[in-house]
Figure (cartoon, one colour):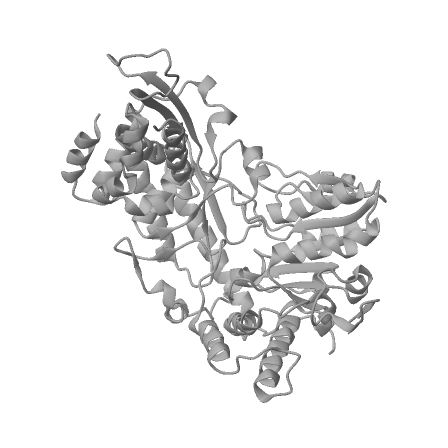
Length: 150
Length: 428
């Protein structure tokens, strides 16, 4: 699901119950990480619920590969897989991944997740979940993008 | 001052019949934070185990101090300083009466339970516990009553022992007794568990510990908000509690210890106020309580604590205990009736805490439930409550914890139960 579709769907929802039901559905639909990927090294620091994040890069389909360019070279796409043991956090993770997944590092660094969350009227989730691993995950995604930016 | 064996203010109850009850509406009207909407709903505050809301009289005490006699204590000859000193020392007298401390100067102002425990670990315990000695705690301690002892054990070569509890959250007293020996130098135990609500049989624990020559420190953080406490009756050697859980400001708390033990422990923090004379060759130290109160204290906090303890005592500590026992029983019944709710902490002897998880096909994380309750204006805490070993014992990542204070009413628990049912519907 694209971020535009999520935003459109959100605009149709009237009250908090519908919005949270939708977030919960997004969480349920996000493919769970296999157990072997839910490892300590992938755990994002947080206190209330757990979030696991894996960051990888892959060349964009059709992109010119140049022998001199290594992993994360211009044109490479960053991929993120993540999971949480809390379903609402997982739904929020799904929204974040719809924004960031399969973009280049430079694109990711120009995207503003807080702007998106404000549009979804979920801005308070960013502060409320500061200790939830969720905000740490956003930081890790940006840090990964910075490593691969040109 | 003569030892006191009774709470600061005796309840005016003259009969055991429940004819006298607290006027909860009038108490609620004294708590300004209760009069607000959260996410568009009237606030239902069920997180007093994390921190209590403050009555106006406590807020006024802070404002009066900062706006009036705002001066440093124990130093100035000027009028404001003397007034501030008087207020601070009056607060200490209130504390003494409140916990029934034999001596005024045994009541030490600290930041809270965490600092109080660390103070004991770095003074008396540091000097009197050595290689081969043992410290006995329970498996339901808050991290603040685990980590300082682990750190001490590493420093001095002592061993930490842990007394287990059963699936209800009741301490295994046979195991506790069996773990005591002549090697046990200190028992450090929680009076009321913050995660489970269990009231431990601390009088019996103190007697068993003293029989092998061990000293006893009790963590009263979750006990003092809910009813009368008297250190002389408990028989313990050290008692700690935090102000902010008992209607007082954050950053202030009390360590009470027997004078001989506090003196034998010597100073911890060095600095102003704790000295008698300073030269570059050697400094000599002040008497209690100044010995253990280096630096400018949290003057406003201590004055606020005094106001809070007087406010709570004037309500009637026994009446508070009875009111909360009623709420706990009522809330337990409501939660038990909800399909999928499993209570964590089912000791027959509990205070203040309703911890639970959602089981079965729902399988929701406590944080999911907490977020959905927050949307409904219901404030609870979710997570491990700084008691990770307790959660490990139950094999759960945490609980949803509703915790009570005197200003709660049955309506709050109705809102909790309705909120949990709505959360279950949304998560299913």
